[in-house]
Length: 248
Length: 204
Image (cartoon, rainbow over all chains, first blue to last red; front, top):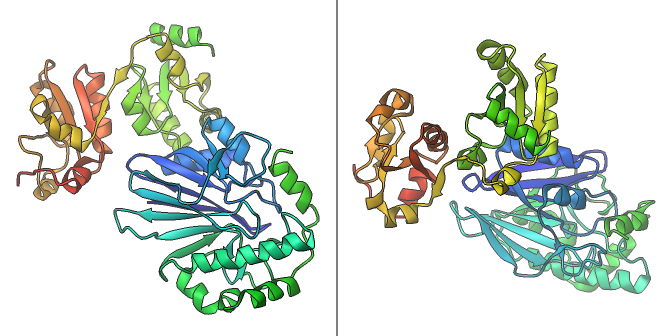
């Protein structure tokens, strides 16, 4: 499998190019405006792959995305959760969507919480094994933390609902085998997580099961109470950034 | 440059056309006479400029690609090495194909398709002798990459050739070269790795 994380240390953002060496096809996930669409095109060429689809794990509220521009420059689909309230045309993804690019096998899970349109992308390499080798968790599960519930809709009821969804999404991710690698959309001091997000960009399901404080909380009400208690002030331009990324 | 200018340049044959697309795209189809040099951010400019200064000093250079970002980057890389780029094309083969103008093509064939039509093909295995121990496709002719130029005379232009290597990379460039010489060729996608992986028969 061809595997290339691309990060923006400034904002603690992560994006990915995932490709198949035989068909020469690749996906780009959560491309960052700060990195620029040119860099994704140049990197894909260096890796010897063609970008055939741009996926976003959710509509971001902390940084500018370049997914739309990249997809239109390349003439390839821009895929988002069917729940994304975007104003532009996109390929809607839903739970259980599944396709293969050569030996790379991709499955979509809807993992709402941080936003109603949050998805996770499970990636297997069928040459190695049928189980997912890694999961791109977006802002649903971070290394040491989980996504905050208040950025998509800051009204108190919506926050409670989002937090409840987040709990169930985290439980669902924990149904994956321990050895599944976890690659989120953020690390370090990103404003999308809470106080415990690690500076290390990746982990495994097993490690998070054992040591992530939010995963340790068995009971949904405790989880919601803790998320409420630990809320940081939202990033200054959150609403504006999400509006822009929605094309509104 | 416009499509007409591109066609004129190709017909005049004065310029050297460098095709910067990935090897797979080049081997599937390219304009006759183009040289394959897939662009990469690392070392491409120096290597290609060095070759041009040695082998084609002073010849006008055209860059052929299918993406503005990559063509612009390749152009800057050559210019930084003192090569003047006289023309660029960033729209790929689409407009050329739409005119019905000729191309050098290599068919890509899957292991399953080759197995099903094996009697219609002569298989050429371009791997090194030590690699053949893992097995060859029954009836395949072994011609290592390095001997291909010399032994091309052994081939028959009226036959169809399927070119094979370990993973489909070397065979891709061998097939492109054979197509350029006028042979009818296909490249086995994924090479012996997918042939053996697909459970197809081998001779040892």
